[in-house]
Image (tube, rainbow over all chains, first blue to last red; front, side, top):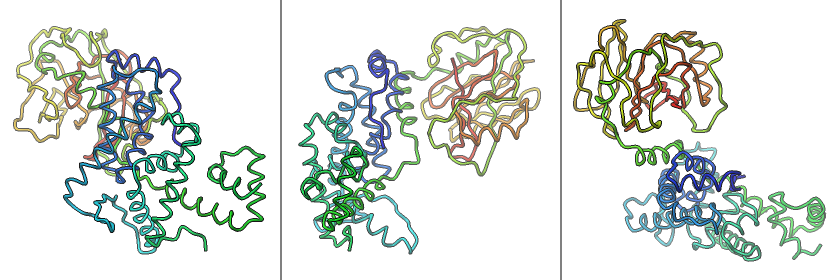
Length: 195
Length: 271
C-alpha cells in the first residue's frame, strides 16, 4: 500500500522548499518517491524510463514549487506533473520508434522491462507481456485510474481527493478501465478467467 | 444482497476495504452465487497481476533527485582555495574508512535505523575548528595555513574525477580512482597529514577499532556510522561540493554503501 497521505509537517516543508531549502524538499521527495515512480511506471512500463520520468517530475516540481498554491493538495499537484511528464515521454518514445522491443497488432512501440525467466515461468512471462500490452492499449483516463487503483493501491477516497474527482465517477472510471482491460486480454487470448 | 449490489462492492471486497458487516454479507452471497464468485476471482486475479506489475528500480530515485537539486543550489568551489587555508591548530578528523569488498550487497536506497559505531572510539588532539558557513557552500575559507601547500589543486568540476595520489609521512597511500585528463600530486606540509576524501575515493587508513566490526556495520546499511581516526580529512564530495571537515567528535557518515566499483563508500555528515 503506497503512502500518499500528507506528511504531518507538509505545509512547513513546502514553505521551506519555496524559500529554497533543498533538504526540506528532499523530505517531500522521499515521502512521495514510490508513488511517483509507480505512477510513472504505469505509463512507461519499464524501470529505466519510469525512473527518468520520475526524476524529471520531481525536478520540475522543485523548479516550480514557488508557484504551488495550497488550494490543492501537494500530492495532487505532484501527481499531475508526473502524469503530464509521463505522457510527454510516451509521446516522445512513440515518435522516436528507435527500437521495437515488441509491438502489438496496431504497431505500437512498447518498451518492456527485461523479464528473464526460466522455462518453467514461461506462462507467467507471457502473462506479464500480455498485461503490458493490454495496459498500453488503454486510453489516458482509463490508464490513469486503473494505475491509481490497482498499481498504486489507493482507496477510492484517496483517488477522489488526488484527482479532484467525485467518488462515483472514480468508481465508474475504474470499472470501465477494467472492462476494457479484460476485453483486451481476452482478445489477446489470455486467461484471466477462472475455468 | 443482490448480485448487482455485490458486484458494486467486489473491488473493495477484494482489497479488504469493506467493513465487517458488508464483508460478511458479500462473502455469504458469493458462497451461493457461482457467477458472482467467478467475477470476484477474475477481479482478484487481475488486481494481483496489476499489483505485481511494477518492477522496482535498482537506483535510488530520491538520491538522484537530491543530487541534481544540490548541484543547482551549491555550485562548484575551487579546491586550492580551501587547501591553502587550512588551519591546523586543530587536528581532527574524520575518517572515512573505505575498504574493498567484493560481496557486499548494494545499497538499496532505503533509510535504515541510525546506529552509532558502538565500540568505536574517537580520539582528538587539540581544539576543534568549526566550519563556517553552510554545509554545502564554504565560500570563505576560515583558516590560514602556516605553511602553504605546494601544489595547486585541480578545480572541482561537476562530474570531473581527479586522479590524485597522496602520500603522507606515514606512507599512507590514497588512490582516487577516476578517469581524468591529468594527475596531480598533493604533498602535505611538514608534519601535517591530509587526506582527500570523496564519495568515490578509496582510502586505506588506520582506523581505531576493529576492522571487522566496521565491515559488519557497513553491511547493515544504516544511516550513520561513526568511524574513529586521528587524521585530517579534506572532504570532496563529488561532483561539485567541497568541504573542509574538521570536527572534534565522532564523525557521522551520512551513507555507507557499496558503489558500482565494489568499494565501500562512506559519505560524511556535516552539521
